[in-house]
Length: 146
Image (cartoon, rainbow, N blue to C red; front, side):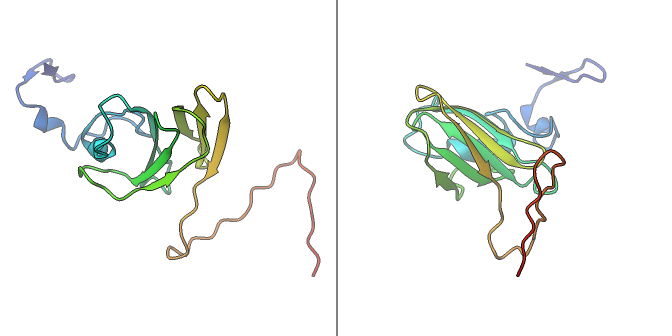
């Protein structure tokens, strides 16, 4: 059952929520924008443990971790049942959580292996976006001479 939070009216059809913006970043494993993450035929409905959308200005990606130790990256939103994805390994057991930082560094937490992996979100060479490195005041500065 669904109700409108504005007036308390019962919503008889769940399709009225199709284009509703719920939260940012998206971290729910269920919903219209993430139907595609369940397209793997080997998933039994409980194999995805965590999902997280990247932050603006590159908010068009969603990472999720599964029971097979994989971190997968898809376009966001992903409303199709068989989306293209990139798959990354690094964990020896299931991935319990994935989260993007505000600078789009992805952290993935392993289950039985107790590992924490960090991943950088970089567009492939076709996009033409170049980022300057972050300068931290507490880190020593290295000057490159040519």
